[in-house]
Image 1: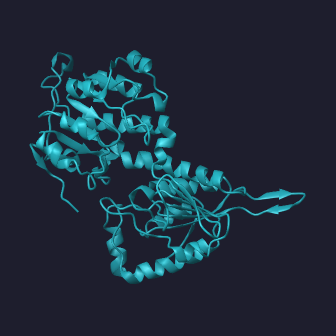
Image 2: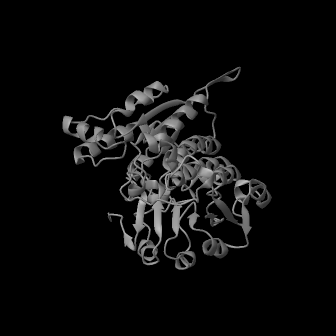
Image 3: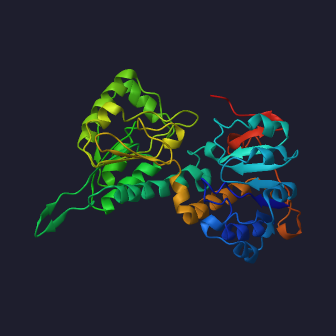
Length: 385
């Protein structure tokens, strides 16, 4: 049985879904691997490295689609490739399911499509498949380095003969995986760090990393809602949003660096920083909007562009930071996919697995497969938002 690897659009994506090390793991499971020529180049994996690992190189994506049972990808497949799918094929990748306009076509083609973003993150056995966490961890680290590069002053405090250089003040809005890594990285660079999140439970994590918690008053009812979200964002009251805006406005008015990470699956990113706050910020301060690709946390941010406001504030629309660390992010993503694909394999009937033909077991009742499957048996399974 063959697993195919499709090359991403190099204009906005440098990652590859399966790396040479992942090829070796898949071959041990009994799969053959076919990869589109050049798919790994932007991640520094040559066709020769894939061949050495045991993969077959295909001239183009169409050959991969026609030859493989399982198709792996970083982002959604191009429309022409979706049109080439046949009944029974499987597609696995980060498919932005709630915004994906091709789900009806996938279903009509009879393909089973798994969107890795939908993984139930509270399941312990699913942790090694969590693409959002693996990619966000790297993104949080890189966001701080991007900010340091844009900022015209150093991060740490310096004692010099010409005077003392004050440490940079960094504010992190959104303390998920990316936010926590951003806090840790900024602290390692010597900055003073403050952070805020909708989940009160994040306070302990922020303080354990040396950050200061920006506290927003919360009712008992809201606190209960925040605790019951399973790690995802919840919808706060208007009063909470007003109070949060006031806290954020005060913190950002004195900040040198702001990194925003807040995103909600299936919805536009919440607006955390408005023009009124931007107008109060210091000239030369920098905002890294990690949610620029889903609507933006910062008013005026543009995906993949850096905008300078009239008062000298730089807004960096960081739509796809993991792609800037393509080699490492591809390694982690490929491991996530291999771990998930392992769940699709039917257990051998005897202990002698070598004598068993590799077969798949697609089980929509399984808590992982069922959660990730957005199309199956000609139907779109995803509940629209």
